[in-house]
Each structure stands twice: as structure tokens, then as C-alpha cells.
Length: 209
Ligand code: PRP
Ligand code: URA
Image (cartoon, rainbow, N blue to C red; front, side):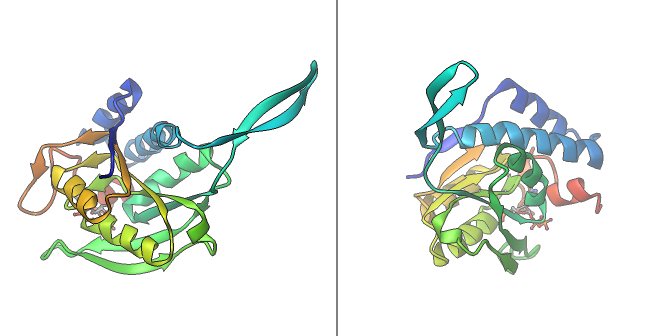
């Protein structure tokens, strides 16, 4: 069963509350999502393996530690996942970025895939799938399924807000994928929106409504 990590750091919680506020406009919304993404990436990468490397300081030689193991890939789910990319890249500048386009059919709430461009060596990387919202879980489950078809074996999912239904779906369909979130909200409404949530993440990021 995949683990669910709720990142309760005070800075994350404070900024998430500002993100949720309906009075927060697109510029502040974008800036805050970016800042929370940096803070969350710090937790998501906490278990990265290290190896020793000798370094010479101005005072002499010592054995330092550097990141080892698989290289990282970040895969935002379009559109809203784009808002989290720059923050993570500031922490992991060598990560490669793939894009998966999935939108939710407003009638059926089922995911529809429309775009995919991944790093050529995607199957050799540890992938962090990013999307601010995990609602029914359909979009994230489809994106993860697609990555697995391409041979990816190490995947984490990082979202800002999740509904219990979304967490359940990922745990059922992808029990090997750990989930990192800033909050688990109460429920989905009849249109599949997270309540209380933050509204439509894509529209708020890009000012499209
Ligand atoms: C939103 C969000 C997730 C999806 C979550 O995207 O960014 O990708 O809905 O819902 P789910 O868990 O029920 O699948 P949306 O379909 O609105 O597309 P957009 O990002 O292009 O606005
Ligand atoms: N997508 C969003 O952007 N918000 C929700 O609450 C659910 C799906």
C-alpha cells in the first residue's frame, strides 16, 4: 500500500491557506504555488540516497556526501501541474521535465489524454508526477499508468490538495506510488470539485475564468 505523506510544515500550511482564499488573484496564486512547491519538494526528496565524495576545502580534504542513485524526472500534468515545475527545478536543476496532457471530461469526470512528451531515458529516472489537485484521482492514475507503460518503475505523486476519493483510487490502482500532499480535504461535490479545496487550479493559475 502506498504511503500518504501530509506535509504539515507551518510555512506550507500558511501559504496553502492563502492559495485557497478566493480573493487571491492569479499573480499571487502562481507565486504561492511556486513557493509551496519548493517547500514540498524538500520533503519529497528527503529519502534520496547519498554517496561519499572527497572534496578539498581551503583547510584540507574531507569526505562530503552528494546525491546518488537514479536521476530525477518531473512530470507535470497539464495544465495546472505547470505551476509547480519552476519551484522544483530550483531545488533539482538537473531534473528533466516531461509533460502529460490530461483533462477531465466535465460530464463523465473521466480523464482524456491529449499530449505526452517524456525524456528519452524516462524509464531510468525516479519520476515525481505533479498536479495541484487530486480529486477523483482519474487524471493522476492515468498519467501514472502511462508512465508505467513506458517502463518507469519509480514514481511519486505530489499534489497540494487531495480528496479522500483520489487517495483511495491511487492506492488501489498504484499501491507502489507514495503520495505527498499538503492537505486532505473533506469531499468531492457533485461536479467532482474538491470541497473546500481551492476551486479550479488551472483557471486560477492562468486567469482563464
Ligand atoms: C484538474 C487538475 C487535475 C484534475 C484533477 O485539471 O489540475 O489534473 O483536474 O481531477 P481528477 O483527480 O478528478 O482527475 P483539469 O482537468 O481541470 O485540466 P486543466 O489543468 O487543464 O484545467
Ligand atoms: N480540478 C480542480 O482544478 N479543482 C478541483 O477541485 C477538482 C479538479
